Image (cartoon, rainbow, N blue to C red; front, side, top):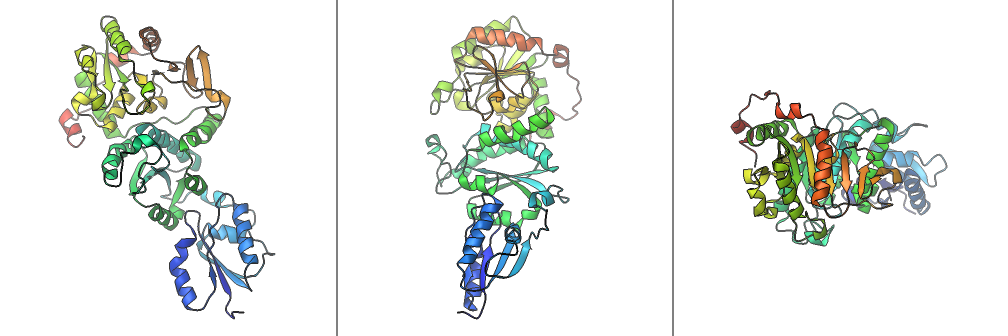
Length: 454
């Protein structure tokens, strides 16, 4: 038997056994028998059971050393743990009886932040899901009493967008180019702190392990490791729980400079008409059944031209523009004014009404108070965890449980009749005086506001 004690090393919540590799080499060189197991991180009881299993296998007494969350695991062993000769806490949590790590972190120290992680290996490479994650971060702020949200995107260079085959064109060579198209969506969060981009899951793990005391990390290590689709986690847990407790959800709003830009844009290109944004989807590569029925929209715009003092601002990708839209006198196409995605989202926030396809930018309208109509979308039974999360209004019309009476979802391909009837209902809910006579409270010029925006 080795005269030296065995050593068992416990990693933190955002790490793995290999993080001890440098320490293991030095201890082994000095003649120690070292074990650094991988812990499941599913629950504290599971991790304690794993540690007991490892200790049972030790040939003699062992020194147990833990980092960060590892301290909670070894503290929870209790006095009857086998082969334990001593405990070493390395920047670790040593909890007294009745204490919990969650309890200690519920009153954050000054400067503590939410760290929101978006992994493009398991999450879609698109705008809508990032917006939903940003909304989830606002719930996390409220839940933990934290001010700022740091946003981290992590990708695997070999498989930068593995969540769906439609993203197969995103490769190691062009990943950063495509990431640049979705990073601006982080601007749709007034509480944004820092933005990080990691091209290695290991580097992200080490960053989190080194900054455990400063962050409330979401998703959890288990959810992150299992690569669950987080859309449902945001709706079923964060939004549902917050609404159940508070009767409402936080509103998603752009940073102030974007809101200022949108007001100036509308003053120049829309007012005194009432601004209505329309999300047009014309994607020939992915989920074509969700595309906008342009004939219905064109007929709807012609119908409105002589009846409503409204201007419809089209939100779409440049490749999705149909030339016929430019011939509508009451239509403005945002991309004709070289808007970027963050500006498109700011226009949705600044509009009186939003309409259109239920994809990508539409998620911006979900988390506001404005009237909206999302078309060609159906949430079937069991889509969310709780049946009351989707309210059936009438045939083919639904609402989210947190939405208002004029925030509606229409199933099936949109018709002109549907658009006309739903628009009339939303229009009746709008304060026309406010929108046709907005206060001129922005002293900055259009040039000042657009200098550095794409």
